[in-house]
Length: 287
Image (cartoon, rainbow, N blue to C red):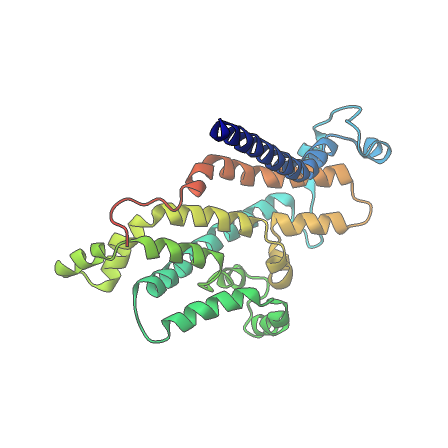
């Protein structure tokens, strides 16, 4: 009898705890969805309707803002269509280069034993904790001296660091891969490069895809790098900020452009969310 009462009390406590957690996460989800829904709702308003009815539903739903958002441009003549082109070029290029550098760095530090290996890994963690704002002036001067300001090359070089969040994720993934695959390949005469490119790298494709998606979303939304090093190569994230800063701009029109810029990110995340969640799964032996 006492055991039964104990189980009932424990079950009641679990239900209460689950309910509290559910309420907390529901409130958190609403706090994330509200700004998105507010922007989406106001993107269908006219300027007059927005001024007099900021938080209400549109009096007359209009799609003109979504169509006219492609005609927006910033000082210097860069329009929204070109901003999308710049965003695609820099997002794909930076994501590819970042994956190449972080994957190679993570593989070497996780699979090879050499003097200073632990020091490098510790340095990579510590560097992530240090704000980068202090080095921006020196970085900008270097870029200006060697002619990389307002160039695709200058922005792409910023993705070749090799460390960061992608490095940490891939380091953990490579660390779980068995070195037995490499040893078997070494018996067949494979060298380090062949082992990496033909054995380890194909096995890391799920992790690389997941990290690439997350980094690609980050590069798509990156505003500060373009602001610092390539304002003439305006991306959609930087361009919308510039457009919004101009005097007398139509706010619903800007919100429509903002919603258009979010759609590619939502589509990519919706299509690959299962891949992101399962990025740590790997077949074969465990290291």
